Image (tube, rainbow, N blue to C red; front, top):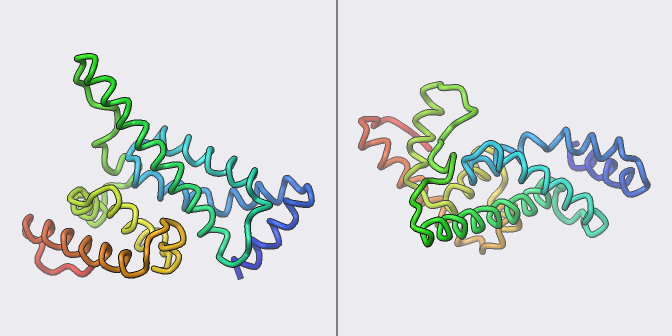
Length: 188
């Protein structure tokens, strides 16, 4: 069972086994990367955020309580790091505009940079463009990372009813966007 394996690797890491932490990293790196990439939409920033996440997780590993899965705890750290970077990006953009220079931050509107261009993924990426950053992160956690609603609450700090409402409204927005481009038969 993955949760038990993670807990054994955490215990080994805390006892000084650096190879155990490397295995934890290998097990969760892709999931964390995909999650932060959907928030940041920029490959280099996502890679840096993943690295920051694993460094922060390593430093805080003693505080991990096995009340939830390690992946849930790790995604909470990733969520915080990604939104910190997003806020910094917005502040940088304000600074750029204040100096009279109006240029886009590289990669902000770059959807699907690393995805293969299969029709379904392209359509989903297009549909997700209508969502706010908060909605995108919840949709990503739920559909791409397969987190439960309860786990999403733990990761984001939102109430259960709030997460359910946001996911429902996000699905409705995405379906409406797909309908606008002529896709009528779609289930999200």
